[in-house]
Length: 396
Length: 177
Image (tube, rainbow over the protein chains, first blue to last red):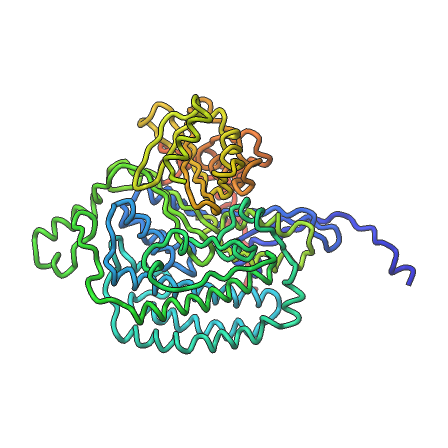
């Protein structure tokens, strides 16, 4: 017994976790300085997926840069698209028709569900529960199938357009989605039965990675990561875009700012997303899906094929881009990870002079040392899962 | 508080620093001299009726050939408590591309400043760990500057040449056997 109770003499050990590591959710590399099992210093290294999206965006027209945003957070590309078109619409000074706004809200919430399902699955998988991952992926598959039904793509959708959406959605899509929405709360109950009150889960997440409200705001955390600490800051409520001011939903808020509260917040968000989709389908207005702003939006394809004027119009918009008012604008939108912001500086030409992407994952990854240092090495995994980062967005 | 009122407050407190106030689509940008940025940040953060507790974003903009002072560092501020926003723009010259870090006020600006240094070569004085963040540490040049070629530098990055060399070397081994 005496031998065991004697304090160990341990040397400081430096290990490199990643860039290829299943629990880092992409190519994130953490250099951890360990004293025994305690993390005394954590240095994240990012940039392995840097593709220069901001530089590319400055060299493309506003329309052509849309598919780039798919590649930011590649598991919720619909939300990035919506965030991008909302920002560009505000810069252009145009507004999408009601129906398009409702449809974009539906799609964004579907994207949120699919992203949160991946988060839930991988987060609990990292901590050791395999079953919820397998169950959750089934629901995600259904959402991706629905995406495929409207635009042919499952992940990189590029479906919304500046001024509306690419094409109207079918009744069949709405019926299938409604069926899914009615069924989803019972699926959520299933996942929660497996995880929420699970003793192992609670041991691993309660009081782990605590960050106070004041500190979380100071670090610039957003989304579920911030709301776990007790703030109700949600771009959908603070700066309503699309149809968010016309639907009724709550913003789940945590108390302690630990991994468990952030888990509860995101799970609550999934139920709210489901509620928003349901309301939007029920109140979906009829009408056009593209704004009537010929100077800024592409003409309908069937008219381009029939009519010379429209063809010329399309040609000019695609090659030269629209004539945009000079100015600068920052517009944020709530994506599953947090606040995704686009900052445009327009010099009056068809291409943005500066396109800046404010990526939530980038900020969250920068806060990793704050969450991990002083904890155990096993908690590093819980912390990476709880801040919900995607490295494609972090590195841009 | 209305954004223009905030700009007025700022002008009252720092009459020599504020150069220009502009509004576009309801968003107000205040152009300032870079000298007292840390002090201005502290003022905006601490004043109870302003209380800009959340720094949304920091980024650089390169106005090569468009403005006399080449760079601008843009701060997007927001107050979650009072629900008002402000955009600060600090002008930075090419010859003296230095500006004070605002990390003591908003710690979350850490990687934004590193990225700005990475992409524009603007040095943030007082930043505790100013390294490149997205690009390799031995990268040459600053990619988001307007005079940087879109297709990248003529000379490939040394790290990539290294990988090519190594892959050639590994080809001589028979991995299947």
